[in-house]
Length: 518
Image (cartoon, rainbow, N blue to C red; front, side, top):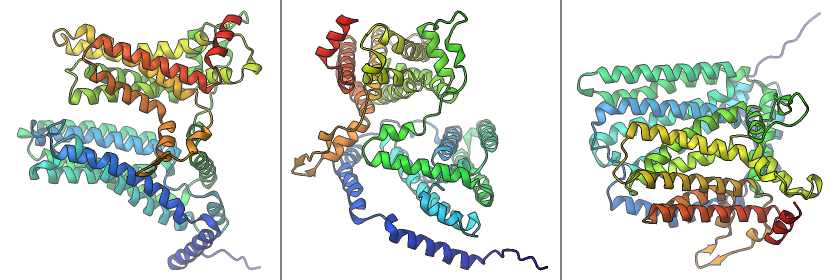
């Protein structure tokens, strides 16, 4: 009796077979059309002409907001680069767990999985090509941000080390992106801990060097070594990848892409929202009654521990950055601290629990949940409002503690500006969470001398909360008095609440009638 074993095809034959399958799939309609490429190129061209070119021109004719030449670049580069490399590595790992470089179209993946080819043959090419794209995009983005925000590339002595550092950080981002998808959760935690510990050691060693000598070259060498240590093990893990999990990730990504292209980006993000687990019985007391509003919010937040941990981190950090910017003079770097802190608080406000979603469901499905207003706002908003306020002011208190005393006459104005910014963020979050389907009128053409700008309206609708926060902070910064800025923030938040209620069908007259009935 003779037993036949499948023989692995040579590498050249495997590449030819993978190329043939890909070409046949592209002929089925999987290849991007000219019209599909033209619209993103059109939006990129509009963004470049109306936003990027004026910003670059303004930067070239004015001093940079952050000056690198004012500090010893050689002495302080290594700790900063280590922190940046750690943040990029952790961010790449997290992105890979949700949407990694090996996510392909479900049908093409199913066809390739049904053959006798090893996963390394058809996934290796995809990984190498996408990692090259990711590294290039990250390199261009980091270099652009460094050019616009600092004077790093204004001098040859800092430009060459800065370019080497950005190249290494880009390589780390690409390698960590693949690692996060192909390695197990335990390996990701081990890598995250090892990278953090190594960064602390390198930063400490660089500080002991005499006069910080060769610190910039050490800062350029660290990301390169980190990328070289992560990349090869990640590629060696391709033959043993869990294809079933990859198929589920590809199916979810395909559905999310369809949602995003049809205008419902929030539905696409909901596909990646973790399902609440555990603590269901903790919502009810031993006597059968529901717990208090704050207790219910805490329990619901603990049912999604990952999101709760992110909120616990972002809210104090955002509050600290917000206070740092509000306590300044109101120009230059202070505005960036203010805007970054408000954006961090905005992100954290959406991750404190699922009560925002419950409020939207109760407002949009009144016949199902009843017409009485009752304690609906207090029950749904008590926890997010309390958590966002407490987290933001905790971070602000830490900044005030280490920076005390604040600049003369800035104590009261800082409190007003921080409070107004938190109110603005809560209003913008309410507007974002009450979002339903894409309004049809946004798809109507907006004819201008520069072409149809309806795409910009759709983009603004998708990210309306972020637009409101950044625009509101800019307007508050332009108002000369802190009291006027706080009043402006309250008015903007009230407008956001009104717009959010209209999105759910609660017009002004209907709202007043329901309040009277309640």
